[in-house]
Length: 350
Image 1 (cartoon, rainbow, N blue to C red):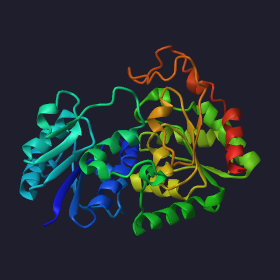
Image 2: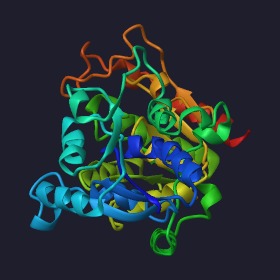
Image 3: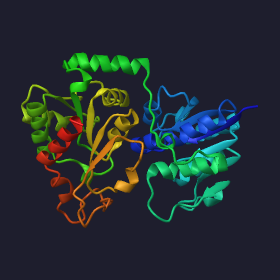
Image 4: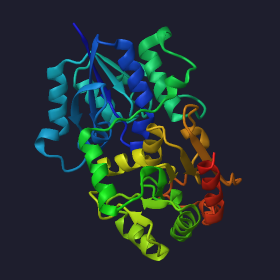
């Protein structure tokens, strides 16, 4: 009889993408001897649409959830399914409690936030900073043991898939905006949902968009989420170039951004979810890195370029309301449009 494994997915888009090597390795290791179910927030489940790994999905709503998505109902589902193993990728106490109350026999996760007692296999948190991809792979290694694959690029390879519906959506976006062929389109993502301090300055984005269209002949497509439409529209207007576009008036969901990032020649992005989506499709990415750590996103399998000023105060993570502790935001302000453009030119001409 097949094992039943429930994977509790990370809550952030970037983290979910960087967890895909862990999911793939487990799926390949168990081959046909296990059935995998994903439990996560709806937009994370949508992000992973089209993958071959999960037989079932369990949506986990956070606020104002309808009864069918309530935490108590999810626990009832877990009990009925009688899962053998839970892989807890989030470090939250809530994920451990859900697995525990759901009567999942083997619960594997990091011993964080006092949740050790709710785990059957509690993995000690590394005492030094490691890439998040390795952080998740440690959990897969704990489950697989000595048979876990090591030191290969495939071990670290990020992976996303698209559905026929998403491909059709991509065709619609290209037609609606009259974009050039994908090899002449650059996606620019300047926002960062997790921190204001990570955002690329708007005035820099305006000048950078002009440089790209004027000197490279590329279309610039500004990526955005539902709460970022106003400022990307302003950037398009201020850039005042026919070949600068935004997704502000296209269907704003995870599928739209995902397919556009897959198709574009190059993505230039802050350290945020869209960066990792593009990387998962094997596309070259230029990271505009400010208060974050290079170690956190390091991955030897990626076609990734990092642009950072390496200031003495970096990385600071700017955890307090996403505000620069020094009040100067130099790590992002000093990534000037000309500096970023020259790096883009180098990447395009490689």
